[in-house]
Image (cartoon, rainbow, N blue to C red; front, top):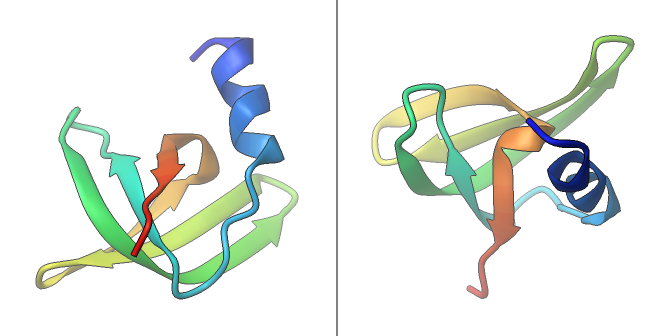
Length: 68
């Protein structure tokens, strides 16, 4: 991914419980709810749920926060 997209994501403040649009590894774009945010040495990971699925995605995969 490009540096511009990465810098935009770092500026976003995403909270637990917010609704976001995320791009999955297979290219699918989903609207999901944030259940947890984990900061580590490897970077920020965001736990999301949509439908019957629960996933852990990289913060750079979060495209935008949706108005709920």
